[in-house]
Figure 1 (spheres, rainbow, N blue to C red):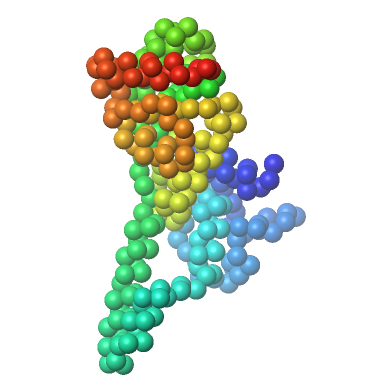
Figure 2 (figure 1 turned 90 degrees about the horizontal axis):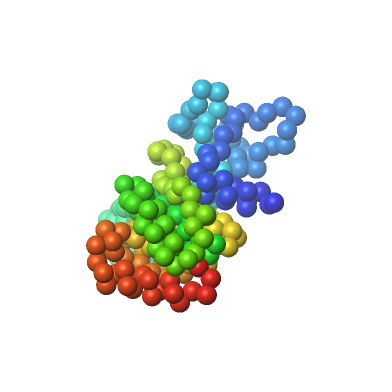
Amino acid sequence: MREQQRLDYLQAMGIVQWMPRQPLPGVPAPRWLPEDAHAAAPRPALTSEGGGHIAHPMAAQLLHEAAAQPVAKEPAVQSKLADTPAVAISDVASESVADVAAAATTDLMPPRFELHFLRVSAAGVWVCDDVAQAERLAAFAYRVMSALQSPAGLLQAPLCFRWPFIESAHDDQSRPVALQALSAQWQFLRDQGVRYAVAFGQDSDHWLQQVQAPLLFRAACLSDVMQNAQYKRQLWQALLTQTEL
């Protein structure tokens, strides 16, 4: 297995990587640290009892690459500077810096959501976004799949995908990283034979669409489906369209 693929799997499972502050004797130099790591000024990090610090390899790599790339000016900003008198250039520059800083702050804010994946059959998974509904989801799915004469032996405890994966201000857990981790999680399910998803909740609907998961049925919340005969009929008819449940 390639190193990046291994890291993606660990990230999707919520396993945090640990690395030493100094290169260990007798091992290859770590690839996720810059070569001048010892010369750079010390940065605060989330420390552990073992004398190391907890960091996410992919996040650290993304931060290092972002820091190494120069910030390019947008064409609109360049033309604005060219047409502005010299006395006002400092004001335009200040506005541009403020806009870039605000955008960077917004982009780096980690989204907060959690998805609970319940494998109901060989090809299907039901997803809700509320931990309080996970147990009801399992009971409801069992009744539905049993009525469809589908083997219910695959029903297990829901798999929880929670973001951010760790409460830390030093790891890149922005939206792009969250999408990459969720994509790896969905790819893992696809490799296990999952071909469709049933989404309960707005977060489930939104994030599953972001990773292009095929949604067979979606509802605003589980309670609406359980209490509304029309929603139940729509779910039932959607499941009947599948040759393999």
